[in-house]
Image (cartoon, rainbow, N blue to C red; front, top):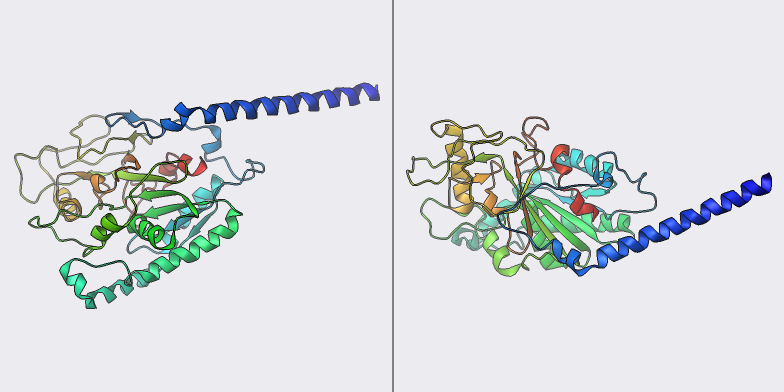
Length: 356
């Protein structure tokens, strides 16, 4: 009887090995197919996509359930005016998916270091360069990357740049190299400079974004390095003075639509359905937000996350995604009524980029 049990045990182990070999070979055939490799870059501009995720990307997935698989670490780069503590919950959320994260060490007072640019004549000409004014931030990125590399054990890293942290990540990669980076994922980053010479528009970065556009590497989406730019459609702005030629209803806010992705780089939408709420005239809030949008992209009557317009948060060459109902900052956000890019309900719809 004992011999029969031993034979049966050996037979079960043998069948399990054969099953695992079959699964691995099927996976290799799937991922090696050239059509699958091109799939990520084949984005139809007018298509609305609803992402489908496996059990591995659900909130219950963790490093403990992943066996010996170690996911590449992520480095979180704070946005202008934010500090490291603002991203603690995002760090915890990523850990629930098995992604170890390091937040660059930045305090709110650190941002006053940028005042050094006021003594540079280039500031007043609108031609400011990132260095040396922002050397302090680049050093914080490098420190965080070094810490994450210790966790990576030879793997490459993901950079997650929120707001200004996204374009500062591009400066870092240009100045320090990108050999450690396989993914740059930006959240509500104003990538594009405002149009020059437009009445009522003042470049808030005093030339920094023009520098990034002219001197930093262009966005790509390749197996070696992927740029993913995520924008939010939380509120549509409005001009200070009503414009009969405006092509949007500027008094709208958008609720969450289950993490729906929008792959088109749209200026605005006049959709009245779903969870949109509108009224007959723009509110004071819409006009106020619109003036902020105008300083970033040159137009007030566009959709955005309340701070950064959707059109400014996308980059040519990147995988560009927009989420309805997403607010710009962790400060002032609420996971239930006003989620930001790092709220768990939103993270679940972009986490797969870190797991691929």
